[in-house]
Each structure stands twice: as C-alpha cells, then as structure tokens.
Length: 173
Image 1 (tube, rainbow, N blue to C red):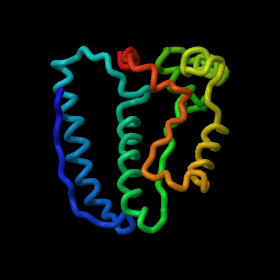
Image 2 (cartoon, one colour):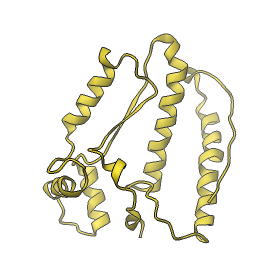
Image 3 (spheres, rainbow, N blue to C red):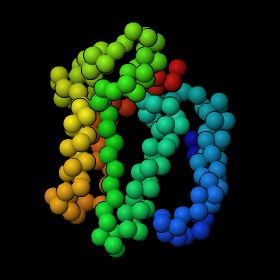
C-alpha cells in the first residue's frame, strides 16, 4: 500500500503555534492518510505487520509526538533546549490491564496477571517487566548532563520487545 498526502502549512515557532492551522494540517496529513488506508485496506486485508498494541488513534498520536519532538528539537536547540521523548512498553499499569482485558477477552485479568504475561513473553529480559521506576530513570537520564548531547531522540524503554516482536496482527482481529 502506498498512501501519500501532505501540506506543510505556515512556518513559525512552537511558542506561537496557531492551533487552527495545525488542525488543518492534521486533517490533510493524518486524517487524509487514515481515510486512504481505511478504504485501501478493504482490498488488501491480509497483513502481517504490527503497527502497535493499542488502538490506531492512540498509536497515531504517539507517532505524532515523535515527529513533534524532532521538530521542536530543531527549533529549540539553538536556545540550548533539548527535546526528547520516551516510549515505554511492558510497564504494568491500569491502562495496560484494560488493554490486555480487551485483547485477551478476559475481564478477570489484573495487574499481577499482566506483570506475569510481560515477564514471560513481553520482554527479551526473562522474568522481568518494566516498572514505573524504569521510566522515571530514563526521564532522569534524559534531563541530566549525562545526556547533554542527546536531543530529538525517542528513548525506547521496552525490554527489547519492539526489536524482536513484529507479528502480533492478531490483536486487530
């Protein structure tokens, strides 16, 4: 599938961003692509590539954040401001429990169950899942002088999950 739509809109600083203009750009660059994919997918339904474990809307907004981090890093770097983001996976939370309940069609799944699932199959680190502390440590690192030359970066904190697993299309069934 090839899908292409794009307008650039007005240039300007993030500090003076016109939200209506951004919504217009999103309508073409994002909603236009979604519209194309939606209709093309009906003819090309077989796919083995994973886009994410969450809804398309959630995944879309998270990917948009990556682009925003890169573009604002370009703008704000001249002021000595570093802009980075963190993409966690496999950190047991209520949001993740809700997702697993839906995916596995089991309303009885709880936090400990999700912890066990991730520890056994959602990480390349046996017996280990991510913790809120892991994400906090990543944020502390990115804010520290030790990361002084890192900007426009997405730090993936996922126990290697996204490096190894790419055929989970069953979640969209």
